[in-house]
Amino acid sequence: MSYKFRDITPLALCLIFALIIAGNAHSQRLTPNQTQTIRNTILRYLGKEANLRVLENGKAAFLPVGKDTLFNIHGLRYVFKLKGDSAIRLDQSVYHGSNFHRYLFQHDGKMMALGGYGMFVTNNNLEAFNTEAHEWYLIRTHGDVPKSIKGAGLRFGHFIYILNNCIDGNNLDDTRADEHFYRLDLRNMSWTQFKEFRPDHLSLIPEDFFYLRDYVIAKGINHSYVYNLKTREFIYGDNDALGIKQFNGYNTNVHDNYLDAWILDSAQTVIKDPQRNIEDLWQENSKLITPLVLEPTLFTQYPSETSALLLGIPLSIFGLVLYRRRQRKQINNPSHHPLVTRILQHNQTSFSQEELDTLLDIAHMEGESKKTKRHRLLSMIESQYPGLIERHKDSTDKRRFLYFIHKNED
Image (cartoon, rainbow, N blue to C red):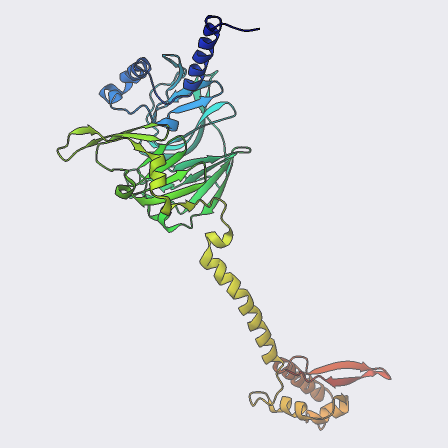
């Protein structure tokens, strides 16, 4: 059977149209109508600020959930479903403050947001959007839960890692880098804390986070981290050298692996900055590429402490052996009691009680006095030379004792 061109054209057009729809199902661009709908929604709450908000933040705003593309404005909790040329609002939220720099992701068919900063408070919340209740709700986590989360979120399989986390001063104190990074296991919602062992991570205070298709950027004032989600590697470098410009008052859109920025020039005029392809940035700075270690060993996390421990164990053993040897050292040492030296120099290795009393120079004493003196002298000898004299009952007469001399050799 054969088909003429005019017979297959409608089928081909349908397939092409379906491919176009599928290709745009999870796009990271808003149509003019969607943009206007979203801005009109937030206008009543934010006023003129609504027109200043950057909407197209890549994976920080557009989230594929099943066959749908959901849109969540960075910093707010409004949720829209993008369908064709429409933006359909799903939430019933009222304006209750901002939540910037949260990490947006999908899990178990739900839109989720982790951490963020708003209303002068940095939180550690894990929130999920309930499509039936049309509202956000909290999910409980456990383990080494971070006190606050304002960092770069990287997801690999069931794990989400928070790197470059910072402890925000909340306008009361200086912001500082967190000394730890964190892993959230989505299977049981448990946190694991790791000591941050990378010095550059501890010196960077990120001001912005960009979530691209294959990259995550943690951007500081002068330096930035660029994480490659495909290769689990990163680049750390100077912003100017990397081509990530820093000006006051700039806004940045994210499209796939591109950054579109509006900046202030030297005359304080807002201008469009050339589009930056982060894939090109990655290739241009290949010499800076470093493997990303996300499951560090104890030695990696605590090199000084672990080295000290490993060195301390053999030193402790050596010290213990040396101590024991000194305790058992043959007494040609002048620091020992003369009585101990006399016993060590004696050739006889076993004594009856009468012979021992003669050696101890107490044979002339009577009854209880001799017994008390013998006990004191044997206690002194034991303290100076442990194990030197050992007492056993005489096998031929259980009422008597024999004393054996044990001279320890080094």
